[in-house]
Image (cartoon, rainbow, N blue to C red; front, side, top):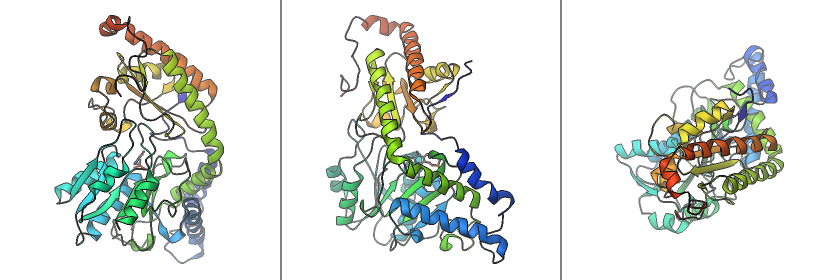
Length: 404
Ligand SMILES: *Cc1c(COP(=O)(O)O)cnc(C)c1O
């Protein structure tokens, strides 16, 4: 085991920043009052909730009343989709989404299908992009919701959200976007992009686990998802996770403040990693688009190397990475996202996701590229199939290669 620890799985979760942990602590032991009570002790909690809502509204370009705190990104996705299906059941039962959504969206849509909904799962192109024309063509008179993610969690592809928002608005259809990977990582203005509902989660941006938000545009009537007390204007019952929400707001404020400089830094490190891998490692391929990609995301496939084996070997070098999607680890089924971009199962199984964070350094990237090169070459040497085709071009399955 290596005594280094290089964390390159920031799309799965992130380390809570010290400043964030500090911002949360008072709400456990001092300002512990229930925000729904009237006495002075609860003022700290109430103020924290107000301030957090204002922070999120400023970041998204909306009003504070349009922000609802939830238990996680998954809950936000469930609420937006199930709530719309319920609210608009008289208007229709058809939902349009994509084949590359997070399971929080896909499994919610599948559950709704078992309860009478009709769902169109749009194909994406080889970079993972939804085609706006195909989306528009899928609209029916009974379409009530379009749910397309802002950026994909496996391959980092940024979807054409502006065009989708315009189409949704032109047809008078609600537009929800799962922005869990994009919130505070890239600029988002819900007004400019015509977004009606947006999901985000704290633990993907150096905040705590177990707290999320749903932006719901004023005028969208979303029924309550959790029934109980009057918290969150009666829309999301349950005593507020004040410490979590305060931590979420602190993490978001810091990430928003540093966004521009962080995007530049991570893009540079990301491109350096992609460049080194494609140039130095035989039979390697970048999955997704190079340019139209989240700053911190890389996803590669290596022919003749197994993803899970690479993970274990990287772990022994002190490097945390992901094979396919973290949510599918443990199952041997190839990632639904990689299948949707047309990757054959063999290359899907040989895939590796390395996602950067604000703390990632150039030195860590170079160390990772060095170790990865050794590991992949070792596995390829052990593969008889690889030996047979070694004489052929080394760029066999690079991005834009034969699997286009
Ligand atoms: C992580 C993630 C989620 C789920 O968020 P949780 O807060 O972990 O429930 C949903 N969508 C995307 C794109 C994600 O990356």
